[in-house]
Image 1 (cartoon, rainbow, N blue to C red):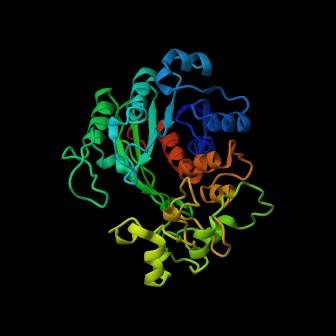
Image 2 (image 1 turned 30 degrees about the horizontal axis):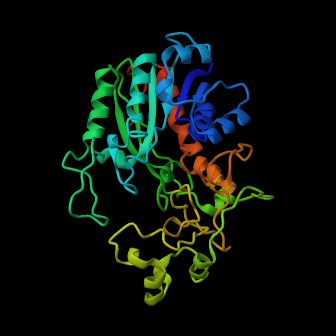
Image 3 (image 1 turned 30 degrees about the vertical axis):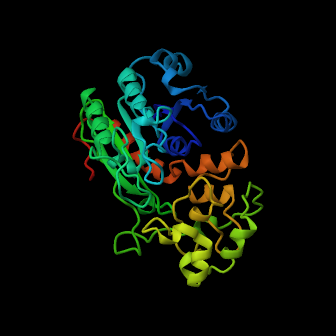
Length: 370
């Protein structure tokens, strides 16, 4: 079957794109304004046109000119707009983040202008509860929670997709349920121009396994056969190593004596949630926690199961199911960022294969569960 045409925006490290390619899509244009992302795209796909400016400057005319496609020839638009404005780990400024907040609606604009047959958008699960504006309220761990318009931004986003005539399906997905060796919860929005129901593929794995599905994949499986790893590796400070050396495989700060917990965590010791990443050492025989962009941080530690160091860029990429020949450019921190923000390739492939199959069939010919 011939490839279908895809336009990629907010392309980043291109995990979503690689998976979509494996599913049968031809990426005809990538777009990102992060220099390391642009360099990564050009190094791995030298013939791929890359729009390397603010996506707000990306118009339909530019897309057609750079991709060589004509109106009506775009099958899919895919991408993951910046998530920092919606993440529960941040301030959740929503549209008050003038730099990144509105970009989620730029994705809708491009869908409207280009009229692809389908779209696929990824973001953090905090998008589901994000509000259009931010207001400080008197309680929560840090005294800052979203306002009484809880979820208003997400409702507005859904309204806009439906207003431009697309069906819409939304699903929070744990990547581990689709064979990725990582507990990574993200939200995916999918829709079709012809109005067909937007459904999602069924999970392929389950926690512990059952009669029908194998168990979640593990870090041991992900890193099997990885040799001659000369990729960048961040460093823990001596202070962090002091505590991490006390942590057994698969544990975190809770393994420390209470007086050392208090000493090492400071005010975070008294927080009510969000502390599982403190002084965390991974376990070979479990899935990885979410691969993030700074594995050396005390509160988001991704310490190797048996060595006193963070995971390398390539180890993180393995857990994100990138092929070993996919290279990341930029400084070490840039590479971690590209890997950590990516959609796991294997998950992207399964989502892409589902969309590909739908687009190959008339309305109603494909049945799947959402």
